[in-house]
Amino acid sequence: MKTVFIWDELQGELQFFVVNGDFRHLNNTYINSVEDEDKQDELNKILAYDNEGNPEVTMLTEFPIQEVKDGAYVVVAGFLP
Image 1: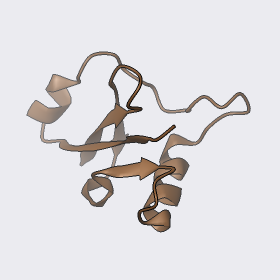
Image 2: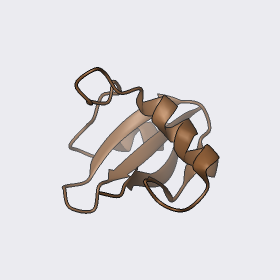
Image 3: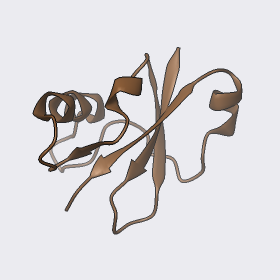
Image 4: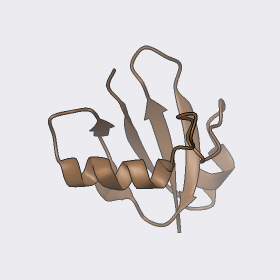
């Protein structure tokens, strides 16, 4: 099973990434929010930022439609500046 993340940084364009596993519980999780810190930490681990602050997941500019057609879950998550 895979999860497609719609990545929302509020001031930028939406991006997307795909990871293996079921991460539906992270839907509507935003890093830097006052909500559930455990979920934010889990989301940070999925992104695994490098030394320059770039996520190590492959960010896509187009929605991965085929992944969803193949059964992937879809969630919205992001970063609050």
